[in-house]
Length: 78
Image 1 (cartoon, helix red, strand yellow):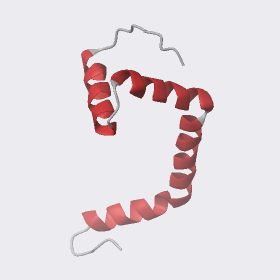
Image 2 (tube, helix red, strand yellow):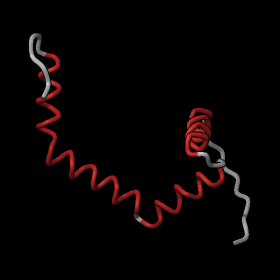
Image 3 (cartoon, rainbow, N blue to C red):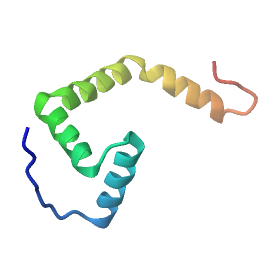
């Protein structure tokens, strides 16, 4: 597939985050951005966020209990 060059202006902080994340994944900035766009358009990202929200909705009490146990002296989280 032919590649097309795009240009975008973003805040320096966003550019730094994108560069660091691309490096962490072993990708170029262009490949990283292409991956993000593909995931967004395919709905993969939205499905992942929805799944995380459902998980937290079902299990938030466990996380709250563990956090409360850690902040209470003399108790330990499970």
